[in-house]
Amino acid sequence: MKHNKKIWFFLPMRCLLFVVAFSFCSIITKRNLTELTHWWTILASVINLVTIVVLWIICKCGNTTFREMIHYEKKQRNIFNGFLFIVIMLLLGIGGMYLAGMLCYGEFPYLAPMMIAPIPPYLAILNIFILPLTTTIAEDGVYLGYGVNSFTSKWAAIFIPAFFYALQHSFIPTIFDMKFITYRFLSFFPLTIWICFQYYRGCSISYIMTGHWILNIATTIQIVITSFHPEIYSTLIK
Image 1 (spheres, rainbow, N blue to C red):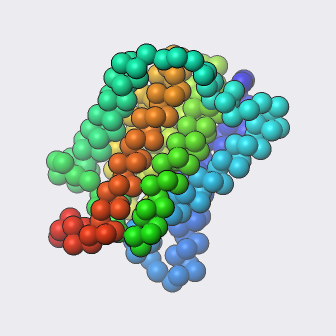
Image 2 (spheres, one colour):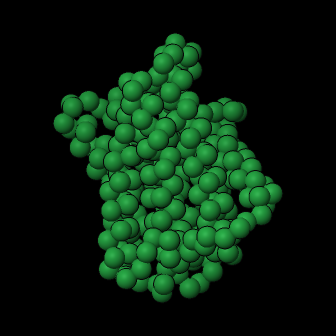
């Protein structure tokens, strides 16, 4: 896939979708954005589905399949290498959030409590099945399959998709607070650079998607816990 002008619309697309979705909900419900942060998983799932439809259209127009676009190869893989890759991915993800929290809020470890805020329990259960799967397909499809593969220059292929891959998290949830926006971006930028670099050099997309899915599963499980036991969340926000 050669570089094309559409990439400059497609890479920031999810950032715009999150800003529009949260702003629209704020207007409709007459609540400020901070009051809507606990609904981020629901809006994220909807936007993921929209993104997947867009990816399907792109594949259809390009006469290709999603598997071909992300360079998915169905073959036997080294279990140890896959396990090691996922462990490194998890450490970078958690370490990035802790480091960003220290830089932005002066706390170590720091995790934004609204990311695991309780929601209706039945939705929290549903989240476990929908959010991790749709997020993995949507984000890795956009920033790796379409993003990295759209550039011929090595450094452009790594850093430009990685930048937007991390930037979208600044608006999940959307709060117009520069400290929070910076915190969210810095939390994910080291990880997205590493992911894009590994993908560019030919690492199996199945390793990346599995690690990504596990990170999101961990988040949804925490939300299930706080949803069924709101008192736990109350201790986090004191």
